Length: 238
Image (cartoon, rainbow, N blue to C red):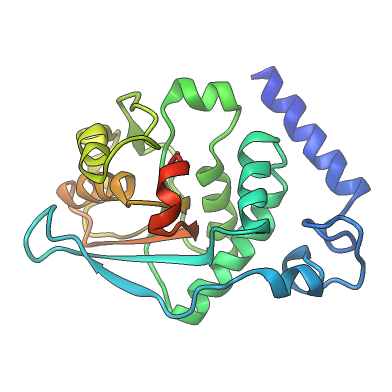
């Protein structure tokens, strides 16, 4: 699409004029940066999540577990970063966010055979111009040296906006909402599923079910951020 090409050129131009290595991606007016294109003052305000968690998903199948990891808590400047990436078209932010995710994966020893992003419905992706999870997955693939597949897992149902739904309604909303275009390419693989934000986990659980039913050995979920239970009422998972 022409609009996507224009947006790509705009972000490349923005990165040329305001490279992340000399201008803080959060406050935009600091120099002498540390990691992730973020100055020390801003970095100190970010709450990184410590050890990863192994979450049991017994409501999908008995005995099936999924490892779900998130890097930072959804508060303060992190909320603004996610919003800027998704709605202000500042797609260059995905690179630095993915660097945080790669470092987290290294620290946790997370490995896999293939990286797959949580897909958007095609009309929503056309409207937005990109899929933020797809951008993160590409950068993580490059940083980890793990093959990337962005077209196999697809969303086949245009699900309802979920911020006003209960946890059970969210699960019902995304039930059978995903499929694989080439299921045989998943058989026997340890999959890393990537998304920008984790709320109730309904979407990633639906993706998990689709991947495991196709023959994936395991699925590890990693998101840039996660919200608290108190924040769910105002957050849309997509």
